[in-house]
Length: 208
Image 1: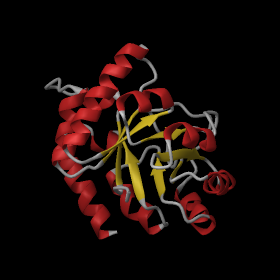
Image 2: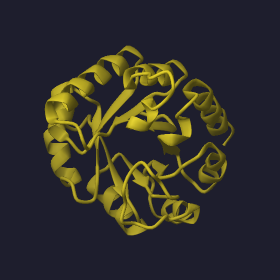
Image 3: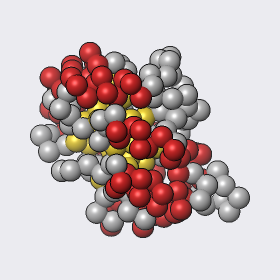
Image 4: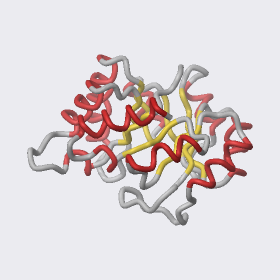
């Protein structure tokens, strides 16, 4: 399944706005504007609430023909029939996730260096996230910002789709894509005026 170049990751920041939109309203708006790749990432909710949220997101994304990826939680992905999972370096190995989820599942993995990117490709990942490219407030990381040059370095080493993640703003998109990325993973870049920001992002990606 081809992956959309604009990869939206859920975060409380998305619904932190004056009109108090719910996360589901925000996701509906982004899907209406053409986003077709959503990752549900949640670290603070209890498991039952995570299940209810993921199930609702599965219903919404299915209605729009969009791909739903679950961050880390393989059992949750199975429970809601998500399209796949995104794993960190300390999570289940790719081969085990593949065994559990099946050959059709989309499995992505976070990488921070070209050596990890090479390993991800060897292990059978479907795509990689590389980052953090810039400073980010939406996810704590022990890794210093890598900069756009790391994208170019990784592009030389692997053939997998590459998504740049971490502090990505609309103004960064053109340079990120020119460095060899296949897409950008965003949170804060589209927060606020979601429809307008998604439109701008999609336009920039089409021009890249």
